[in-house]
Amino acid sequence: MGDDIAEGFGRFKHKENIQACRIARGSLCETLNQVLNAKDENYISKETWEEFKLEFETTTTILNGYINYLKKAKTG
Image (tube, rainbow, N blue to C red):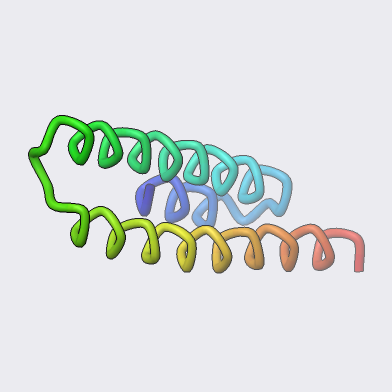
């Protein structure tokens, strides 16, 4: 995920940066699903799942905020 964001930032174009962030957001969702599967298979505890889910929600909120910032900066 971090690599996608760094790549988009390095292109210096808002549209490409937004697309890279969307890819990162998709990767974040994939990771959430993998951690959920790990919980369902009892590889991790419910507490670990809850901690990860909270981090996921926080990270998603920040990433969505950055995408919205880039959209406004592109048009503003």
